[in-house]
Image (cartoon, rainbow, N blue to C red):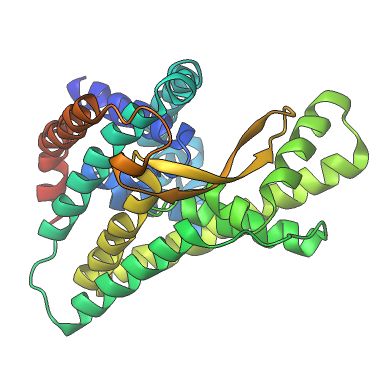
Length: 314
């Protein structure tokens, strides 16, 4: 029973993380000790293991092959987290953005340290992977968005890439869509499909969904394979992703450019990290630093929740 409650709480934390631009649920999955099980489960659900289990044991066999209890509990927690995050995190982003970013900066910084400690021996390969991951994630946070395309081929690949980013610690799928220039096209199209059931909108949403399934099925296998054969290098790369993403979470950022979202509201689009003294507004330095420390300490609790799971896998 306690294992289910713990898994539900981890799912809630992942759901909340996915609501926040620039934060990945994959980060929470890793530090809470369920990342590799999650990747292997996705691989089983979207692969031949599920059909093999059904063929050999019917519904019960398919349930076991899909790790059904794990999936159901985690998804329930994620739904609760997403719903709660929409009503709380979004409000905090609008009213106290610096303080919220400060909290998550501390959380991700501690997560990077935690992840680096999982590498059993640093060699030249691990160091190169760390530097590459850091540079790539940092580039993503500062890159200028492209114009995007409304072609179905581009929509498909946008879904595949964005969903792959969602399961990578330190990389946000929604931010990837922004960089590809697809965010302001996909979201309004999804809204239109849900409201009017317009055929062309439904085709685009269906193509995007197929891309997501393709991305999950493919990328989960790649990650599962690299964890089994190049565990240290893979973790070093993911650590780099976290370090590089810290620029996106820096509490003091001045807006360089705005964009209009799917609701017609003007929201920040391009931002530049600055020192608190250069921040255009009240930097709230004391509270921000306290929340950074709180986010850092919170990882210690998640570390303890995931310690048992991690030790069993190692």
